[in-house]
Length: 322
Image: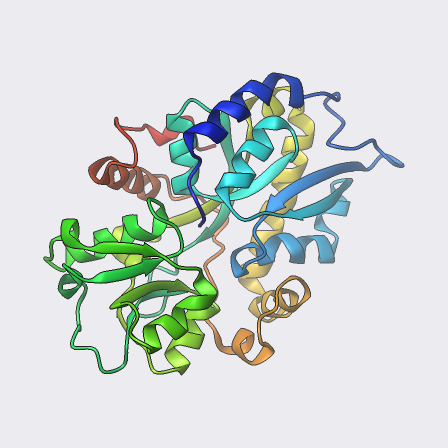
């Protein structure tokens, strides 16, 4: 859920795509094989959403597929998308808005597995729109004309916040969105430097602990059981490294299923790659890891992006999705 791919990065990625991708045979990844094991680099944001990836590594699910994973921390789509296209990463995690934009710009990307999804439950999701405890705002409709913080402009945050406002009967065109890092949002809301903020875990729980009130579950409002992110690679990797892609997909799908069925272990692994307070990790709401991409919901999101001007023509997400 990070910054969209900008035109300059897109151009650079396209220029390096041919030179950087597919330099080894189907059995290979970004590094040489050792004892039959393929080494791969996976670009991933160090956030709650990617707990299954780290848990799967810890449980040996990738080793079962003869894959050795090196997780490379990224800041989001601005690094992950061109990193995959150039061959710096074999696979990566990215939110679907960034991937839809990249695909609309003719980048040859393809999702191979779900990354994470909304819980689909109003008031019980892993993120939402919060306001100060004594704010007069009680519904998303009342955000019209207000200042709302999101982590990145023109991405999944403001797109789904607008969906909440529309659903509640408000006018999303009058909302002023401002960029603010998630870690800074609880304090900004508490100090009333913004009227509202879209926040995800663990900062969502932190904000509520400080008194912030939830006025909408924007992922739930946007589409039922919305797929938020996906693991992806290039079409070239899928074609030239078909066996590796198949094995990686099998490992990540097993990891997603295990994390969904063992939330306590998912919470525990968070402490190995993030700086989340253990007390917050224990009680925060986890994303859903269904293992299935909700194609209808992703298409709804793409249509919202067209309405909001993030893309200039209708996108058929079938080209992006597995």
